[in-house]
Length: 65
Image (cartoon, rainbow, N blue to C red; front, side, top):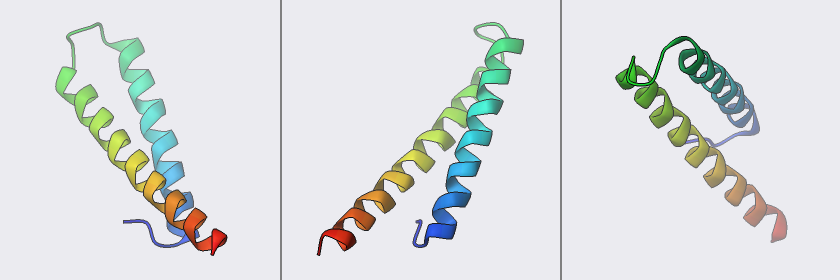
């Protein structure tokens, strides 16, 4: 769980890195190849996006009170 702005920024960096890795795999491997690797990266991306959204929601709630 992301609790600080520093952790949020690190998670964003990790997200960009994973997205680049996925794009590279999609370009270098045909459909059906390395499916488990691509799926794993997509799951990691989804998890990070969810954590970022939770943090963003909590930040919004803190600022509005």
